[in-house]
Length: 326
View 1 (cartoon, rainbow, N blue to C red):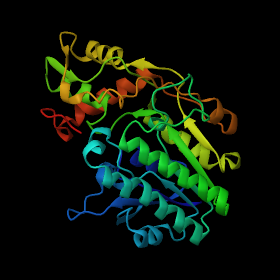
View 2: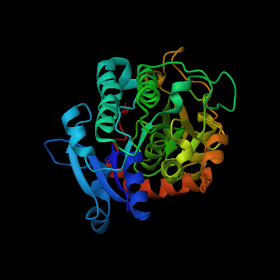
View 3: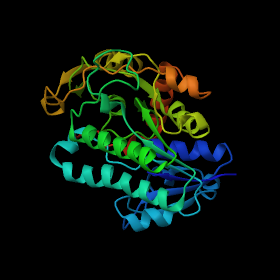
């Protein structure tokens, strides 16, 4: 079995990836953000038998010594630790530079020193900005339409530089919009579902016209593993996309029809992004991941929404439904 480290394992995608790696027989170390409560994020919700199989390391991705210590003896590193909320990046951009850029640099430096066999750096479809053409392939130009996306562009280019300058075996993994159980209410799908399950008759949202390419989280996790297991992906940046899009308005109406058809959508001004910051269209190409790996989408959008609603019904207490979550 390969020993792997997952940074950001306490988060939404990271916790699902950790589970998927366990199921495939990997020896997993989980890097979770240190805090005085000694909570391990979503890892705390895993069944006891699964949690007992994971070595949990608490630290801070911004600390180079802690990152290097966590990475010792790991054959591969899945680097997911990041700040990701776009609205929060508008007023706290310094923290995004420290976490997303410097945190990634810490992983790359340690991997070079430790001669780590594989490094997977997590990107985001937000680096592309509003689509110039669709489907968006990996040659599409980058555009930093928020401080968040700008820091992810910076982290991606650092990763590329370590591959080109030092031969570090890096792959840049670029998921489009992932959704599913455990996602925070700062994202649009849990925002809609949590408001509906809380009995709200008016669902407060921002712009309804942007389109997104939504991946169910288990398919995203499978994409990470498929990229890690292919030698052809070293030095490459690779989308994980469904190559299908839906507008936020159509998405909201679909979820409303499943939970409370009488609910209405209300535009909330504070949820609107600045005009030049809003990414209006994301529709990703999955040609490259299918060409270089054996990855295939297994969950339809409808299946993923059904599972997400069911999980949130059982875990609504984890969400603050009366405020705008940034």
